[in-house]
Structures are given as C-alpha cells and as structure tokens.
Length: 88
Image 1 (cartoon, helix red, strand yellow):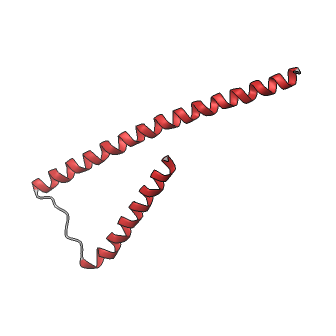
Image 2: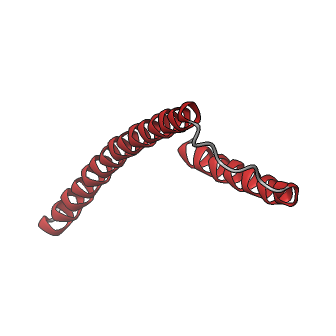
Image 3: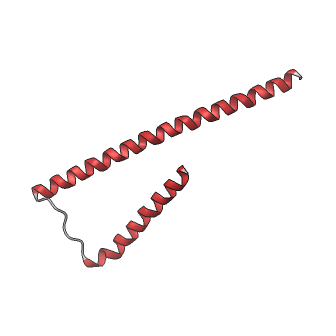
C-alpha cells in the first residue's frame, strides 16, 4: 500500500470518528434542550396556577377565536410530529 493510500484511509477513519463524536454531541444537546423545555413548561404551569389562584385570569376569548385556536393546535401537532419523525 502506498503512503498516499495509507494517508487517505487514515483521513477517512478520522472523519468517521469525528462524525460519531458530532452525533454524540448533538444527542447530548438535544437532551439538554428537552430538559430546558420541560422545565419551562413546569414554570409556565406554576405561574398559570398562581395567577388563577390570585384572580389574575385571562379574559375569555371571543367565540370568533375558535377557528384560530384550532389552527394553533394543528400547527403545534404538526411541529411535534415532525420533531418526533426526525428523532426516529
């Protein structure tokens, strides 16, 4: 095997190691983001409950806002579906 072929194989092997390290790092980052999102959701729930107990409730949405709410629910569900498809 020539020195050039040896160098080429070493570079390919190094590239595979770097790719594996990147995948591991991104998986760790993904778990960190998921933890932050879960914590933010818990804080939002806590503040919402506290506001409700203290009487700072939101004003009732007008009946015309129902289609907008449905659109928001569909958008969130679509985003979640795409996120879970990427993880698989």
